[in-house]
Image 1: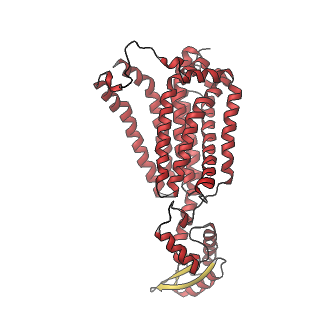
Image 2: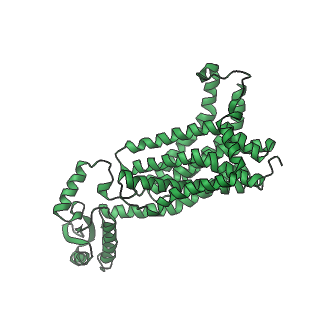
Length: 417
């Protein structure tokens, strides 16, 4: 019972800050244009809050009900020696503290080398490239594309007033990339015009043609023309993802920074921690792209991959830093920054590393699902979590703390001079 009280007092603030960071990051999806993104944010944020309650209330109560054998096969003994001060992580911390500048440079060089792959990233999968295995529908679409115009399987739909239907058809057929256009059906006021494109459905060429088509038919006065269909809808979704990234990503960075400032009462440490997490994200994207091109043969990333990968990696990557740095600040108040960081690393190293490896494995499981988007998100987040766990949190962040010394906590004065 005493051990649980001490654990809750020590770990509670870090757990609350960690859970709050992920929750707030997920709630930024509420500002997204796509309904699916907003729903995902609300559902996942609710799950994180419930997990926090479970970790802080349900789990501690359940553990103290049982005697010490609940920790079998490594059952702790009263008065036993804590081996963490002389273990692997303590030795790593002491080793990094001796040469923090070369170590931090080497760490960032590794991240930069991996991030070079991100420069060649292509975004946007065609409708036939979204599955790991080719389903029957894709085979049929490819057969039709070989015999007819590639867009004949998913014609673009244009709605226009009856009196201007022929003018709209003339304007549509004059657009580069349009194979044909005809009235498919009509009622008393409007006509449904089917426009067949030359390009493959949901390809960059199809999107370019849709933009030109919209411009052309909108210029027909009195037609009140609207362009829809599968390709047009996919283009709108692509534009919505671009909008969501411009809104959500800055919000995530701002909220994570504010949580770190409130938790650490510092400005220097949050900036450095956020820098390492963003660097880890780009390294993960680059490493993932190398794998997708050279191993998996994916032609591009799905539209959702960049936003979701950034959301998960920044929120989860900051979590591990929160667990380490909050413990380091507590120890720095008594031992100083250098010894405090070594103590924090030795105490939290095994737990955080185990959690990170487990989380990476969970995301890696997404790679066995048939959708390319889920496989890409799983691989990128898996790589990012491993980088955060094994490189950023264990090497780079301690090295930065050793380099800056007590300035790491500025303007806070809660450390031993």
